[in-house]
Amino acid sequence: MEEPKVELDDLEVNQERLKQNTNQLKNLRVYGSLNAGIIAGILGMDGWIGIVIYIAIFLIVSACLAIKMNFKVKEYFRSSYDAYYSGIGTDLLLFLMIWVIFHNLVNIL
Amino acid sequence: MSDILIDDRIRDWVFLPIIIVMFMIQMFRGLLTKYMDNRKTSQKVTSKAQLAEMIDKNITQQSQRLARLHGLLPDQSFKMKRAHLCDHESGILTKASQKPAKDPMQSMSMMNPAAMADMLKQNLSGIIFMALQYQWVSYFFSGFVIGKVPFPLTQKFRTMLQRGVDVQNLDVRYISSISIYFVLLFGGLQKIQQLMFGDDNDEFVDDTQMQMQMQMMGMPTMPSLGQQNDPGKLFIAERTRLEGVKHTFELNKSQDKAMKSLKRFLMQ
Image (cartoon, rainbow over all chains, first blue to last red; front, side):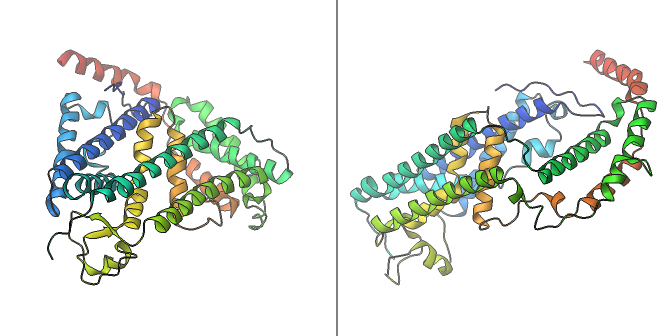
């Protein structure tokens, strides 16, 4: 995963690199929720445990991101909220879709 | 209610085909949009009203850029630029804000037929595909149960999720094929398509998402460009913003910043 450094000064953040970083983050989150959906579906999780798995995998992805950045969030993103917690609701629908599909494929049909 | 056993053939001939077909159609739509974008020639400014619109847009862009990047200019240049825009009698912003507010009917983007046709085409293609898929799924695959959702739901969802299945006491978790269609539609085949189409198309992604939102809210009656209703107010707002900018030339702070980053570098 390539994350070029962003130098924050008072005037303006380097826009292109920030955009590239957030794009990569978005891709990463999509992969994360895909995997969470597949895990939840195959293991046959029922009900609220599935959502817990989604949140757990989301946090694991954020933790891996933090380790990769050596915990210096400011150099890569605008704020730590942005980098770690911001997109949790948007990929939830994707997770639900994948969960329903895999749950049906593996356990029921 | 004990578990219902669903035949293997439902999976082979219903579940997987719906998913695969919807995915293919989504990819096809993506390719189509790309193709259309490539073939679109740049729009020529044809009418006078369109020219005036472009001028207004450029003025606001210029003032916004000045307000954002004022630190890059030394004091004298900034003052000159600001006076050029905001002066009491001859500034561009004051002159522009004194123009009468445009007639809202006229200033909608019906004045540039090319852009309107493009938007209509995009919307139509999206809606046509949605309607087609819905018809296909509900014609061929109605009347039986396809699968089960993993989470418990209330009875209110019964009409939505079990359309065509008339068994009253059936657990709401068992769903019909239309609900798979909805799940796929809203869930985001788009995101997976994004993964495939790669990172070179940021604007493309924003367009389809915007397009999806517009579809869900019905046909858009007005494009959401605020300038077209009352440009005078916008210019007045821009002018007050520019006049309130506290200007400091960033070069003056550069020594301190260099010291700070050097210290930070040496500390590591």
